[in-house]
Image (tube, rainbow, N blue to C red; front, top):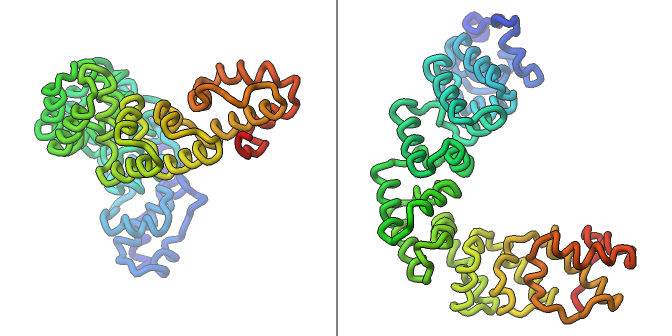
Length: 385
């Protein structure tokens, strides 16, 4: 078996005199070891050998891929790898691409791959972004340029106007590329129009998070209806921000997050008010909401209504912002340099870095040597006394 496979898999040299197996030499596995260590057919062993040594896949990944594809000749596969390298793809990115979508290695480099890559470059997706874009969507390079990619991109551009905005949208999510325009996207966009959302705000939603409008049409209608019932003005940007948040979270997770806030002491009215002030609140994980609420109430001593009035605080980092700022205030209070009765404490914790530093760090750091340590999170916050 081993001898017959070797005859079909020559270690030939490409035009730049680089041997096939030298693309990923650090991962080299012998064909004999592959044949002896796994229950594979001759053809599968050949494929595993190539995927591990020329594409950098692990033995397990290559073995799984060998059940989906068959590499009968290295010539085309080598050309695919060479093409990716020509466009600046790193070895790691090539491995990622082939691992996510093994059929790529069987694609025709000139007929199937190069035209799509050149099209993406023409839009402005180039350099490091090109490889990241391809790696983010495992099958985009295998979709039809004429029948799928170009029509979808033209459709999106009709809303977002520029290639720059199109790229910004696709960096958020490429899921929309695989969505049915007539059966999903158009009905969902019409739902927004029926609610009175202006075209510029629909465009903003697509740029911010195109995945939002890929939701099943009945579910998307529920989302738009609920946002409207909560009192959001459809002509304001906050309406599409709320649509984005609600459409990105499953109903089960939404209710669990809401329950965390209500069980901590918020009223239904306070929840609605907080969400209207900051729709991104519900994009925070349930764990983060619990941790921040526990800290703000039990450590910082804040009251629930105060927190509800400033939901921006949930978008901040507990470790990088809240604890260091509280430590600074704690230290200054202990030195009687500031009052223990700080007005709008939660707003101060969530506010701009520049303002906080100017008011509490810069002017006191010479008087209080440990202030810098406190601001760097090196002094434990024990609570405001």
